[in-house]
Image 1 (cartoon, helix red, strand yellow):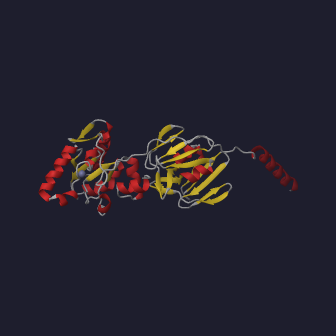
Image 2 (tube, rainbow, N blue to C red):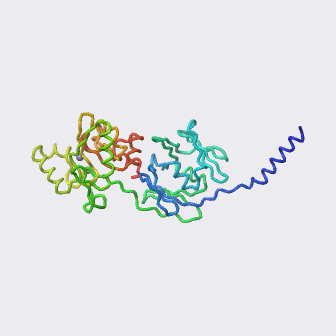
Image 3 (tube, rainbow, N blue to C red):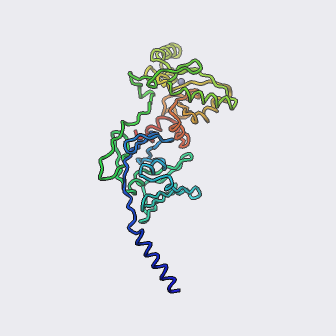
Length: 334
Ligand SMILES: [Zn+2]
């Protein structure tokens, strides 16, 4: 009995000798995340995410997989337990456990309380970037000018973030720049209407998906030039008067249709309900929802959709963010 216990003790000590010095987690990477962007940078290489990082209440949240990669954690060292909604990250001799909805970070050294909790949005888990990266030994800074989280080993230079993320916002307050060029390249035509080339595939997919569910859609407006927008405004104003016109038609420079990213859609009976429920899956948002007139500046327009891309549209859908204005102000760090 005694010998047995001694053997265990000796073996344990041998184990300690072999492993006790451990491998210090040495931060190696530098990384940049920008709230509202589906891209991130690791060691000066731009990488694509299938979702976005976002800011909430002053904390930047990054999808767990990409935050782990940025810190040097590999796939096999990200352990997700769906039952307890717990994630464990392993890096060299460091272990960090976080639970969705809890602000307690369990480290080997003991538990600490963070000022942010991991979140699940849709099917994704997002972690507070600062707390995770700092635990693995990184310095974490917020670059105000470029709206970016910088993650880097403290003895190294800060990574240089790209220009701040620009999500095109056109409303009564924000005018389209006069030198704006639609989608950066040529217009495409879909069902006879011009659009930014970014919309070619998304529109096709949206219409195909609708048709597959018995919803027939048609387009009633796409890209408009400044002159066309001016003509529509003047025409409406001569019929309704200026006051009535401004709540339904945008003055020139303030119409989303001038971006090439907006589409007016008509359809059979269930078209608007179908679009409101499903258009996000193709990167579109209902731009002027009911009850949000004070935020968007426009009356409810069940036919007007704006393309913003799937990562942002999906995020807004799962998070229940109704307007682009709210997304940009509260989640994209503006
Ligand atoms: Zn419209």
